[in-house]
Length: 178
Image (cartoon, rainbow, N blue to C red):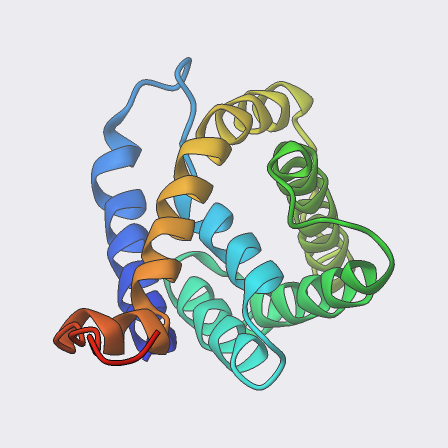
């Protein structure tokens, strides 16, 4: 159930990101709430659901903004497997680690995308603009904690046990038992 909701939420964030947030001035930057959701999905969902969802989101990102098809799904799947391997040894679920986690994942994914794109199209000279990257990282750092809190709230609301308890009537206590 949460997988379908996360897919719908990601599509809504992508539409918001590609239509409304592109009209912001260049000095303000381009917020990327979809990337925060992708890191949240990679950290919180388990292997059967998360890789499939990240693959679909990567394909959608390729349709909207990709030059070469398949770059975003590869990057998102690689990000998931790295975070899944790290979560066995490190505590990356804590609130203190969310901002550095998102920022390091952003650098990793964008570096991977830049490297693959420059390898596949050597005739085009791609420029790595540190000013835009650092501005994007600042925006991601500001948006990470509120969006992670919102996604945690949605995750706790959509878990099957809590959703089942939401629709179930509370039991009356038996007065004859202790």
